Image (cartoon, rainbow, N blue to C red; front, side, top):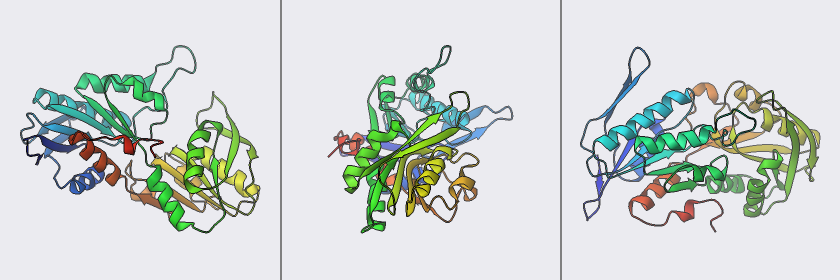
Length: 324
């Protein structure tokens, strides 16, 4: 179903199969319905997609999450864009809340790909005119796509929840490593809290293995808020949480946008080192990835607001990082 403006401009929202609940919530907030789509896999793993209504001349937004298996969901989104292009959609905007391969944004050693750049090139080749994502792992990814990129920011959603729930407590914002200091500093400014930093070193030959070294800042007796853009196996964040508790922190709260939760993340997070984990629904979280101290906040209002602004040719800058 499409939403039409007085000048006959049409908006359609289409969803991949990875996280239809998020797309459905976005569509409801926009007062429309998801365009009916047929999608299935052949016996050999190839994916087929087809739209069950005309999309000629529409302003289409293709919403797809990228959990495991990420390659399958990426291919499905590319095929959805290609189908829209070949069906004469006027403009195609890819909505990837968690940008695929975002951590592979540069070469660390010789003979390596820059996978995040390749993903942007694939989106362009499939017919996408615009990209929309939430909390990119590094801002430079915006330059990989030859077209407008809307880099949305989930910090206000997460920070407002923390500010309300932990009002009156002695809060300290903590960066789990030196690479996240700038983001943690923005959190600290928004919450009016001091900043602490965990210094750690990653072994380049052992992915997902980290060693915490030292803490910079006062955390004794305080409620510590560890902030990051994503949690994968939770090795970094839980090691940081344990370091905070060892240094006398009263509580440790973890806040992150993207809950990847690869094994053994749930087991690690569901421990005495972490008092609460706050994430968004940018990725689907099945029952086996949920635990009592987990809080999931919806980014559907953020995405819906950005889609409405793009569709109406309004400014999207209020959704960007650092916007006052």
